[in-house]
Image (cartoon, rainbow, N blue to C red; front, top):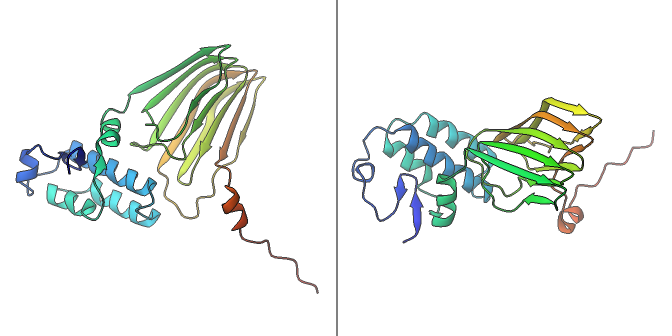
Length: 221
C-alpha cells in the first residue's frame, strides 16, 4: 500500500535493509520498530504484556529479520503518523503572557523536552492519545499564575520532586497501573509562582462509569 511506513523505512523505497534481512540492525532500525510498537499499543493492538515483551526484544535485536518478526502481525503505520514520529521535536517551547488557554490534545507527538514560559496562561497537556517515542519527557517550567494540567493514561508517571513551588499548589493523582509497564516518565523541573499544577487521569466516559465495578458492601457480623 502506498503512503505507508514499514519498521525499516517507507514502502516503495528499496534499501539495503529490505533486501538483506540478515544485515545487522542499527540503533535507528530498533528505534523505528519501537515507534511502531508504541503506536500499536496506543491503538489497542497490543496488550501491556505484549508491548513490554516486544520492546525488550526490539532493543536487543541483532538483525533486521529479528525486528521484522516483531511487527509482522501489525498493520503498517500511516504516512502521516510515521512522518510525525520521525520528525519528533527535540525541544518544544510554549510561551504565553495573559493569553488564552494553550492545549495539546488528541494525537500530538510528545517532544523529547518541553519548555513552558507562561504567565497567567492556562496550559493543558493531554497524554491519553499522544504519540510517545521515548521513555522520558523533561518539562522545564518558568510559569506564573493560572494552572498547568497534565492528563495521563496507564503507564505514564509524573515526578515533581525537582519542581520549585512559590505560593503555588500541586496535586498529583496518578493513573492506576493495573500492571501496565511504564511507557513515559514525566519530570517537572524549574519553578512555578502563584499557580497550580494538577496531574490526573482521564475522566471516565458515561459508558465507563456505568460499567464500573460496584463497591463491596460490608458484611454483617
